[in-house]
Image 1 (tube, rainbow, N blue to C red):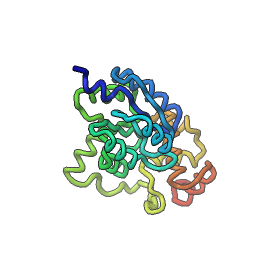
Image 2 (cartoon, rainbow, N blue to C red):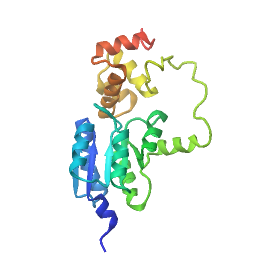
Image 3 (cartoon, rainbow, N blue to C red):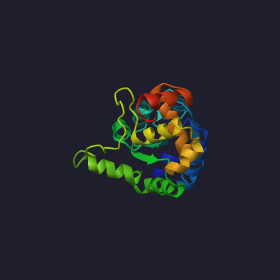
Length: 229
């Protein structure tokens, strides 16, 4: 009898708009799961839907924030098209605003791209054993969610951000502040102990959330919110 897991994972889809993490995941996935024989890639929701119109996937790695929207409906459509499909969100965000909508949409895993390759590979390998692919901080957040509210009163030194007009995460605020101070993405990566492609992802999301397209606009927005003088 053929291995059902192998059949399910034989063809996989990666949805990621940045070249470096997309290539990294496409190289890593077959190494973690040898059952994967074919990896298709897409950079937008439209491209992903075009792939799904031609093939039925049992495994997908999807970034949450894409140029033409979030992958929420794409996740729903994929798990509807193939019950039992494994959809893992691969992103840089581990906050409630991203984690819980992804899981409610039908994602069965949530992996942070900022982790070392060895950790991501280990989390992917657990899928064949029936283990959910969850980064440790995400798993901890899910557990805390069922044991009461997360966090407490903000630190007196925390920046006061207009959360209605600027729904940025704490990490995005840190990146925006350094960006406005003139640091390059490589320098920001060193200061925040992140990979450069992770910082690039943060900057992309900041620009999208603030509806801006340049460092000058980012500086103005940061100053308006009291992040820099």
